[in-house]
Length: 243
Image 1: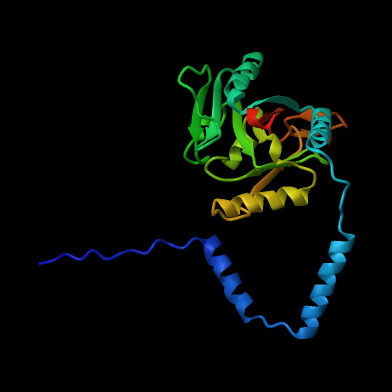
Image 2 (image 1 turned 60 degrees about the horizontal axis):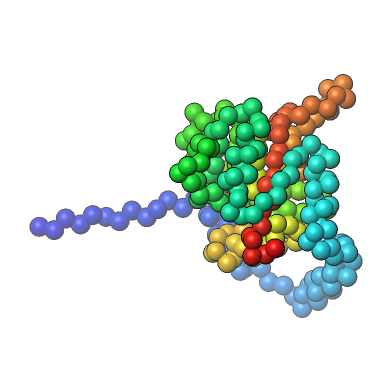
C-alpha cells in the first residue's frame, strides 16, 4: 500500500493577494484614444516643468550631504571598504556604549575573528526582543540624497526596520557611489538595483532619515532622541580601486 502525502499549498500573503487583485483590475480597464492622448500630453508637460537641479560632481554632492547632516548633529566618517571594521572599532572605542553591535542578517559586514566588536545578528523584533535595548545598531543605506542630507534604507532581513529607531546610537553604512542629488534619483537607483537582483521595489517599507531624532515641542527646547536614536553616525566608504 502506498501512502500519498497531500501537498499543502503555501498560504498567500495579504500583500501578494492585494497586488494580484490590482493587476487583475488593471487588465479590465480600457482607455480611449482621447484619454491616451491626454495622458501623453500630461507626461510631456511634466517632463518639461519637473524639478531639474544643476548637476553636481560626486565630491560636490558629498560636500553638500556632509554639511547638511553635520548641521543636524550627525557624525560622518570616510574610509575604504576594507577598512569598515577598523573604523567601527575606532568609533565604538570613543563612545560609552560598549562593543555590542546589532546587525541584520547578510549585512555588508563580514566580521573578522579577531574583531573587538561583538556583532549580534538579529531578524525581527518579535524574535529578538532580548536585544532591543542594546545601545548600538548598524544598518545599510541603498542611497542618499545630497540636497536634503537624507539616507534611504530598505526594510528586509539585512536591514530590520526596528534597528533604525530603537538603539541609542544608529550607525549607517553608505557606499559613496550611491550618493544621489535628489529623491527621484535615489528611488530610481533603488529600483534599478532591485531589478538586477530580482527583488521587489519598493519593499515593505523605505525609511528616510535626515539626522538624529529630535523635537523642540516642549518649551522650544531642542531635545535629541525624542522618538529614535540620540546619535546618528554615517560611514561613507569607497573601494580603493575607485580612488
